[in-house]
Length: 487
Figure 1: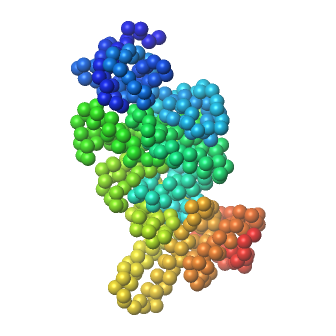
Figure 2: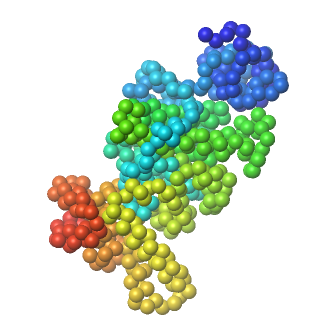
Figure 3: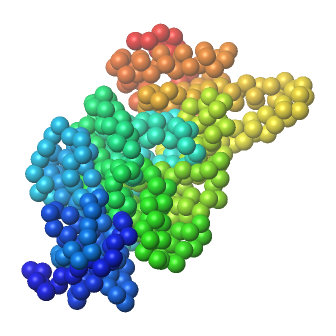
């Protein structure tokens, strides 16, 4: 039980912080109780007492009593009925049609598991986005930043990822950090419309909430992900976004009189985000060493004018396993998704690809680099020789294949077969429009025609690219039929 004497009084108010004097045994990060269901967290100490960040917006008065709880911040929820709901970092319901008892209690800020409990990243995380799955693959357990300016398609990309993963029965924890209520409602409606609410948990702090509560949001999301990981599930965590989190953490730190560093961020901002993101990874199953369970983390971060040297962006690049850069200029040219593959990195994802995927990845990446070099020459108005013109036409087709709508999902088998057909010029397409129509028809056939699905899955079971090319040529009449008209 908490010592009844371990209590104090408010001596100073500087919302969203208060200074409390009188505590004798209070610990760092401990939760304190202001009464009437209102709580806060100790974030620092000084000679006059401790500084507490508030989790609520109610007005307080000097001299109000405060009681220590002896507990660290926790999120409480119903583990069976939390799916499809929107809760705050403490577990209180914001949007829901599915109320439940808050019977599961998790400490929010826990240390990352040690290296001895971690396993190699050896499974690919399918996103349904061709340019990512083919050229910039992600691994289950990877930490990959989604970076770019505002309104360049980052959120649409993440929605495609969670839809693909939810349809594969994976658990998704989506964290909205300091967002407007409209953003939470839009995500809530999207999940219902796509019928994936049973796989997604949304943890949201809203813009009008206390900075102290907003600061807990990504940590609460990671705690929930770890809970389901320990239940034997693979989990995907989306943090939308860590730029907001850094700004609110800076606000708390400046008000608490922490010494400011670069761009007025506190000196421990790197440690704060590193401590959070190190909790993701691929982990050994506690009872079966042959099995693993992963927590994949996709933190979003906003850049300004595409600047990857921004303090928070560069910090996160140093912490994580790569980044997908959404280029504003590509977005304005109409490329969807606007991922700049030449400025994006995946440090561990390629090791999860099969031999055919790796060979295609290597050849197409090298070809597109050559394509970009030839494209620079065309800017000078030079007449291109026939060989260079052929490179440009083929590069345009490849980039046309990677252009996809926000609701389009392309299975890995379809990606491998169609990319092989385009790159090896097994079929001749006049332009991107003809290719896109072929691709659309082919996807519908794959989804609705069992014989097409069986054929594609069988084709990609071969061991090398040369064999795949031969098998495609042997089955070319069927492939042309599936792409000529929808099933």
